[in-house]
Image (tube, rainbow, N blue to C red):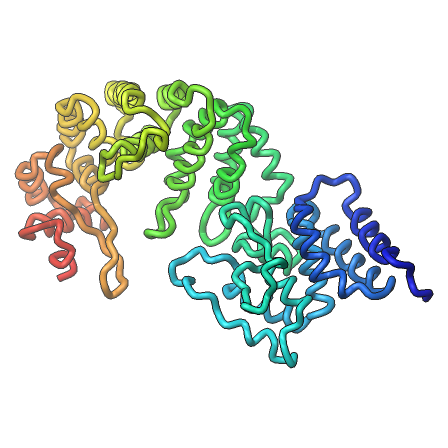
Amino acid sequence: MPVPADNSLHVFFTNRLDAIVGEDEVTFNETHWQTVYRHGIDPLIETPRSAIRVTNAVKTAYDALGKEVNYVDLIAVESLRIYFNDIYEKIREDKSKFIVRNHPSQRQDPDYDFLWENYKEPVGTAEMLLSYLFPRYSRDEINPRKSIREDEETYRKRKRICHPDMFNYYFRQTVPEGEIPQSEFTSIKNSAQDHKEFAQNLLGLSEQDGKSGRSRAYSFLKRFQEHSEEIETRKEATLGIFEVADHLVQVDPRANSLDDGNIGLLFQTVYSLMEDADKPTQILENAISTGDSPYFSAYLLGLLSQEHGEYGGTERLERNRLLRYEDILDLRETWVSQIENQAIRGDLADINRINLVLERWRDWGDSSGAVEWVRRYTTDTEALIEFIEHFLTDVNASNRETYEILKLEQIEPFLDIQDAEYRLDNIDDSELTERQKEVVNIFKQAQSLEDSNSLEGWAF
């Protein structure tokens, strides 16, 4: 083949890359591309044959993934696969060393010398590709002018390969099981213009298996909160969330201190929607009064109260608070009114996490109302056991076992402990289920401890 004229190979190569995406709206950062291309890809494209080889590989991958991925990342990773296949395979086999840190145990970046076992020394073009694709990869020898600075918080939104949720897209060239394809995600995100449709979509996702034992609703919410600024109908989106939030919390509950399930994602999502919304207090008042999520509403108002120094929170400067304190007080009144209405209707016991709801009812409304409701509800012995069960807490022992405890100080404001003890002592165990027997035994154990708050006592 003839030697190409100056710059003609560059034009030939980039024109082929443009033709692959056509009119598609792809995720593409021009500044990043200039740096990656100049220092990591262009030196590898020495002939028309090499340009065709890379673009053919990119086209095959793009045909499989399309808008699911970041186009700059896709070109870079395919270049790495073609020219440094041994490094590519090592990365694919050891994902944990390359994805962004999302756990305290990942404080130290690993030693990457193993990547260069087949080389006399690190290769500059490969290092450029690695440092862009995987920000954890770093060497003192990399020229600062070739480095790329990014916001870690938006890696998932920008479909970067270094995000834990995106890694497998690039290496398997298919949407991983349990993930939500971009077209489906966009469709559901756009349905937030109508709160009824949005709520139904969230319910549908909650009934579908996602990854790692979570539902697809969990996967959607993780991504949706990053797109909150794109939502123009913030009121409709918020109303939709409040219609189904309590259900979503039950579907994907808290797993541990690092994963609080859907409750944390829902709070972050609503907070993001309200940050730039017009009249956020009115939107929340509407959502609380018309929605079907009293537990989530109480949880949300409790966290917003922490911004004013309540419930163990650190008081924030006024400019850093979402709502004024007087607005929170108004929202509490709205919430209490809803709870009192549910108590009258007789469906208060159906609320998820009734213990928190009762505590907030006591704090924000007429405390005697909460106590009286509990007295009436627990007249039946089975209901008494069910009520006690709501106050059980899972704790992790030093031997890594999980067991349930009951802190009497949390239940005493609502229940006559001596009366409950008498009733449970005189119950016929043969009429109880195994779970009911467990709850009764935990209650009696709490009674026998000098301090039911002491984890040591429970462990012993």
